[in-house]
Image (cartoon, rainbow, N blue to C red):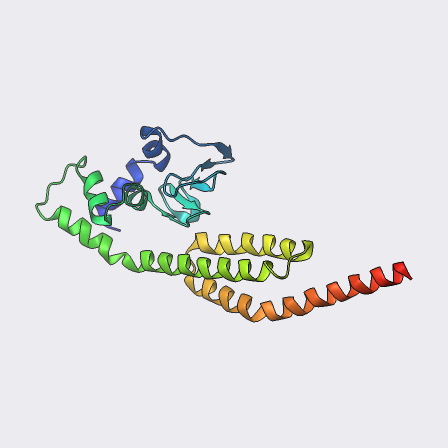
Length: 205
């Protein structure tokens, strides 16, 4: 990461940035801060989490919203909240940093562009999350019982953990496994329904 970008992320905490905008955590759990998401509208439960310095080995605060799946760092947050480009978000923070080199600003912007692979992976992960959510909603709209809900509750906890880690390859594998596994889940659901029907019939007899 470019020196100036690194300095921005180290010197300005996400929690401080939000507080300056009048946005305060709804609750705290350990070192994590939970907010109503400032990026997407209609958040009724605190789905926006700010992770402390040191999480995943990063020396700056990071964030992730489990509702709209925005995340990573302060520059992303500034971009998404204000609806501006990453370059403009970077310029906003660079204005408070003393820059000696004439080309430092452009260098910092180019450095951010070089990190686009990480951002592209994040976008792909967001797309996969949308596909997983769609597959889940379609499935549960027909095959709905406590066992299915319990399975997907645990499933989504694991998915969220992988999504936060930024592991695109594993997310792609998870999507494939889910799609392939839904047919087996349908068979198991039908077996449970048949057992319940037989049990009810025996009880009436």
